[in-house]
Length: 393
Image 1 (spheres, rainbow, N blue to C red):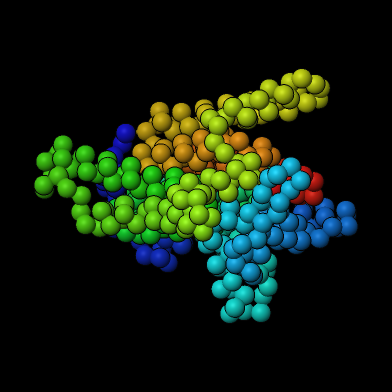
Image 2 (cartoon, helix red, strand yellow):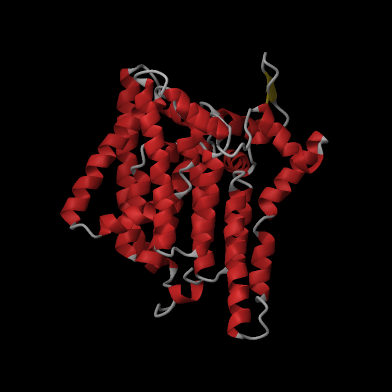
């Protein structure tokens, strides 16, 4: 693997905040334009079906669970006839905390604050994605990576009162901090990511992988005494505290110990089976037509994810990115949860887009712009259709 030191050779001191924002501005403007198009199409599509686009974005599925936690705290559950128990303890607390804080200091409702947090976090995520891709591949590839993330078929989730945008923002900036040697910042952001979604442990693992690489390099290179610096140690200690702290709290609250959170997830029929259930689901699509077309699409989609990851490995992406992306992808694909949610669970795996971004950056500007505009239009239409239909549970 290319170590972190070689990524910073020849680079000047990191620009200030205003300089960094100016550097990212074209990518952020492009991202905002794509998301604005998606929201406009959603509003028009929903109006044609006598539905409220704002309700679809803020008051369905997981959004309702987050706002309930923000308003009433934890302790609510739904017992289904089949014996399953849907508990709000399955939802990590950072987004509800922000919703409660926002509702306390503004006239906005909890749902309104969730929507605002999502919009702000999506821009922060886009900036973080640009920062990481720019650091590794340059600004043109960084801008392309942001646009590719914006035009994903399920990109509408980035504007929903869900936790995906918030988590991606924290993860992206934590990874950038790792790549630039800001250990305490990386660990703090990783801890916050761990308070946002269970997959926050993937961010902590990336911080640990970078720290171990730094330690091994120091020992093999004879630098100092071969021990990591105090800030590196502090960052690695901080990184897993968010996720570990919440999981342990849930175990204490349920009285089932450290594995109590797994029981909570089991009540939602969520678990990790190595992808067996998903493989059976995909195989089941081939038993009928047109279901077989969906089976082919799913198979091609999984193959594309694997190929993109292997391209990243071959091109020697920094180890923290590979660790993070690998864990996010494996946890999304190999969980036995509702299969319709897998596309949105993969939204935080943005480094998978980097090989495509590098290829897009090599095209002429006019050609790449035309391609992105076409995909953005298709994505906006699909997002509106999807959210007005089955949507992202």
